[in-house]
Length: 456
Image (cartoon, rainbow, N blue to C red):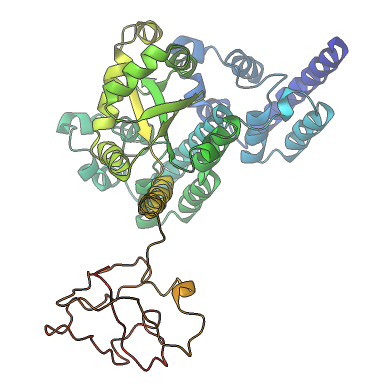
């Protein structure tokens, strides 16, 4: 084991030297600048003070800062590979892949975690941010538009800014920063950026935004899949009636990297606190699992109404406010945030919401059927097995027809047509012509009308 570690660290040191050499050459060839490289890791380096960021004045110090923030290291070079891909350093990408192959079987070959997925997404966003600034600056420099026109494009999206604050936006960098601070563009939403690119004729920027959306489409889904895999049989055990709340905890827009672990420590290990947490957010259901990374809370839903209440609270923002209140009351998190107010972003995947809703509907129908002790007659063209196999015989229900019997209105997910509500007031059986008769209710060659024992 010690020999394997020695070999891995030796290989990593070689990769580190190669990384610095190639990034130096990248800058000297005029393909990019050190400032742009730092901006590509802006989110990750945001915990450093302004003075510390200014001191990163060489590529070597830049790589050292990434290592200190645990963004790259002997056990994790994924972000280094993403960087090489994004800035077109094919040789460096190959070196990283070779390192991964040489160290196969070690921790770096593990399945990607939710934290890595989130890191990749934030890195991709920082890359898009740099590209946006570069292209908007070129747009103005080429005389295709002005900064004032760009500000006007977003005036409706920045209603909280005063005229003086708008005047202080004196360059593209400040414009993008304000748009982020106001939540107009962010990691999970770059739609307005895409619209701007289309309206301004910035085809290359539009393409970059499209690539970002394509690269990150399904990251949420893959995160949930990773959670499901880590939980073993949670999803199957609860028959698809669990839903995931993905949360990101931050202070003044800066993600707290240790908050996830602290959150798990507070609630995951203390059953009493977990129950208090359930009552506080008022979900009327129970938490069955917590996963680290950007904390994923797995909720067990017991009914359709509780799922709809949860979805409504998510859409109207009350779920977020309750979670925020809960987190700000925790002493451990207060220490991490140094007394600053903690903010939280909550995400529920709409696709998963509909999937869980459908599963609950199916379980509800099945439960009612079992409760009645027999299979209910279904009136849908999807269920052909309800039709008498021998169509040469008329369908007959034993017993005498009831007077003034009424057929209740029946609905089917698959068929919009309903059975007529009223029978003949004299108690006679109703005769169906071809336009009224539904294929499954009456055999086509039946010579007699149906005798109905009771209202269904």
